[in-house]
Image (cartoon, rainbow, N blue to C red; front, side):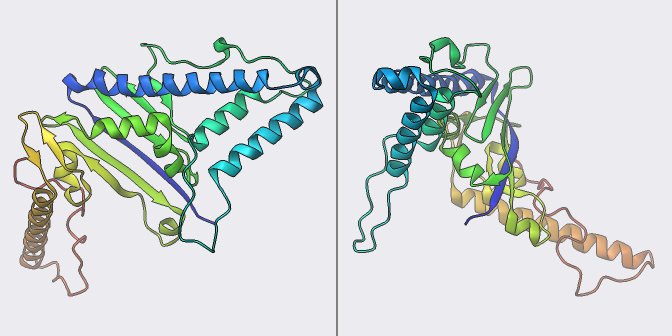
Length: 283
């Protein structure tokens, strides 16, 4: 049945990259809305005169359309073959948005969807819908915020959305500068039931490498140098070493002050904030 999950986080973009990342998300969102609009027009043209005028007939036709699209999205699995059907040439977000635009309000009458009915983004748009999430840009701080709702499969749907796909694809090509990057935090039903709080889902750039190197994506800096997985794991090892040294110093200071000794039960998180303390090395 799945479980609920969520994600949120802020990423500081290099000033030279901010406009390009935002433009990639705007372009993908505009293309998505254009496809949604075209689909609403095709649906309307395919209706009979009765379906275009009678709310009950219109609603029945819309439900038939949605059911057919869902069968393409989620075809019955064949247990007699290992082969999988080809993926549908559209996403769940597309079907949901088309259905939303074509749906009738209580007491409403069928009508052709107008282009002005759709939220096409402009150069002034700062927040873009991403399935069950959003991508929001703040030019003043050169920061972008990623956030999803808390729902079953919300994170996957947000990542698979037009804006979400464009956003994370574009992050892969960013040339990161010092003090840029960030961390995407997340949680899910099972982790929360186990008493765990939000944890790093993924990280980007020098900030991500400094704080969560094992979860950080490989990246290229502004000088063209590539930070590989091996580099990031080395940083993680150095971070753990720095935390262990801090823990040992704290234990010795406590013992010297006569406030007691640490025991074997003390763990690596007793004296250091695991996963969030910045190491002493330079990126």
